[in-house]
Amino acid sequence: MPGSGKTRVGYVLARLVGLSFVDLDREIEVSAGSSVAEIFEREGEAGFRRMESEALEVISSREGLVVSCGGGVVLDAGNRALLSSSGKVVWLSMSVERLRERAPVAGRRPLLREPGDLERLMGEREPFYREVADVIVDSSRPAAEVARTIARSLQEGAA
Image 1: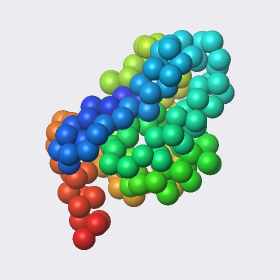
Image 2: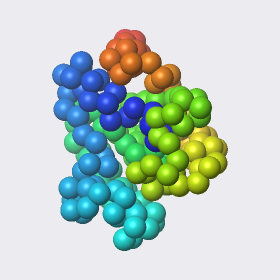
Image 3: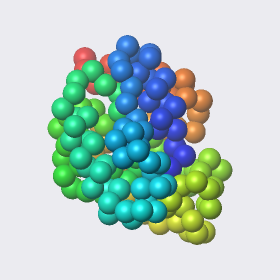
């Protein structure tokens, strides 16, 4: 979800476990030469989601990465299948109240414009997060602590 700490935790986790870090939204921005907000403005959500799926397909073919995906990547069934088949998926879970503090409505996020948007997004996405998640971690704690929890959980799962 927006504000759950995907980028920060992903970066810290990658350093912790000695892998490279990739932020999918940043990859899309570089490829498009525009920010996510500009892409939404110019091409709408459907255009952005198309770019997101294309970028995920490219990234998922690489190994040795920690990838931070945008929260809506799970909306596409093909993306969910790709996520599940290409590595371990971690859902950074957080209460809507805490998310609201970190990703306020009418901020820079294109899908958070009106009161109730965050709750709507959570309602739409939560079943998909549960479907693909190998690990669910409360991300309301400091990023380093969350990253250590993920690393331990993934290590235990590999044993």
